[in-house]
Length: 287
Image (cartoon, rainbow, N blue to C red; front, top):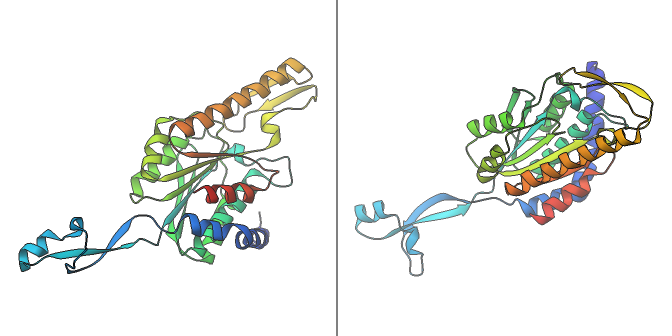
């Protein structure tokens, strides 16, 4: 893309997503994620009715009278958006490529977080982590993240979701809202899902094009794996071959759903032709 095309695309995404966010998502996000945990505010003398477990024993011993810790709810959360930039994400048979669809989802999530005064960060990954943008607040920052997703070099390599999660957990210790966007075309170590969901609130979002699941009858065709470069001739006129392919994709989806469920993590299967805001609304409402 040329710079002017990028700017135009980012503005279009902002207009579309801000309308959706303000109309349907922001309120649900705020209700679901008001803040998690308690943070220390001050120490004051003990008053009748205070909880014993709040007593600050060090200060109590020093002044020989009871003091208690006053806590307040942590209002500020951190959202981390992890985006797969392997070559299979730079594809689409609808009006948008997967990468453009992901950019819109990231924008909606980002503006929802911004409306709650939360920080948002971005990790772009494929076979390794390619870029990390630390969490920040504000509209300009959200638009910068969208631009990064649109303009990233989508690399022809096998994607490693587990490596991205490992990296994220290594540098972000505090519990965060983690949104993992990928087509999950490649294998991964499911153990990392369990570890990640214990430390963070994890939602996996499988972004797929309808042709990822079913291939039409177009006769003999040379299929190319965008990530490995492997090519194979197939007879798409064979009803048996098309059925076998579709069933394999359905089984892959079932395995994904099972892996996330067993890890106590959330999962969404999203077609690039559908309205993702309804799915996010339901997710926020459930939380």
